[in-house]
Image (cartoon, rainbow, N blue to C red; front, side, top):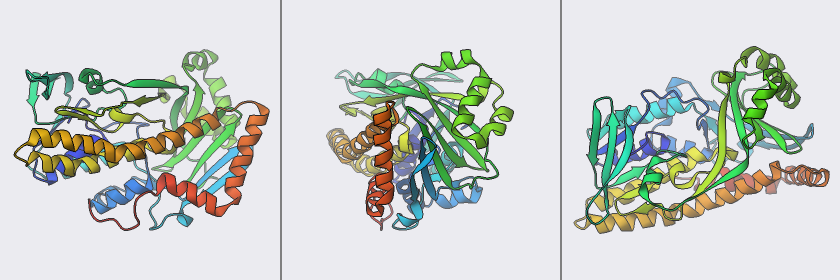
Length: 398
């Protein structure tokens, strides 16, 4: 398993629970991941609960549930959603620091004798048999080079996947028209801690997500490749841009955003990989299908990938003809998961286009659409259920 993020560790945990030997190669020494995949969709919250992991997360107290979602466009409220009215079973979008999620997954996986986590190790190449099959990975770590031989190598190393680059699988990377500057500030005293807010001004917007403990994770969109210009204008100008979207944040931004290192840039692009696997190798999560950050679906799909793939791989590994069974399992995995990924991609693409509208007629049309959805309860619920509530209300344990 190359990559110890949510998808890689979830898959490793599920395979280890089924009695398989799994080695996870992770380049970081610790899970200090700021601004990385903190938004967990209700579907994934339900799955984490069924797997017995939400109790461990809740015991740490480091999460924040989202009850409401609000969009303001041009200074006026345009759309309000209360997820408590939509959820079929009470599950809600939840902000979980990725460090907490990864530590819980790793600790649970470590309970199983077949699980090994190699920190501070990086993949440098893929091992191949004479007939071209992937038979493992060549890595490097604190003690030097290391070859790991495996029946299956999984690329779970994220949006800048080294495994994808090394695999020879064709892919297309499409830059989108914006990047995002992320930062954290204290939650304003006048704001509740369970409402996600989006503020839009023509073709610019800011996303504000409450997180633990009484903090606000803010994403300010900037033009693609625009960081150099933003820096040239200086921090006071950036403070002014943020305050224009949310005057309530002005004091906190000026106090807490005092250096460029207080911000983190997210380069926005999508990646399409026509084939997620080849003989002896498979990609999951962002390595297979990098998505836009809109609606926080990256971690959700990584978890779904892991839970779909684990039983298929585990069954194939016990078969006498495991090479052929693995190939069949990997093809089946993509057929199971690709439709949901593409639905999310289409939804995100439509919202990206809406956020990018700048002419007065187009902006007015966008505002009318938001207000129409807001006025029709059935339509609002139908749309959000297609995004956040796609699993059956009653789930058996994966």
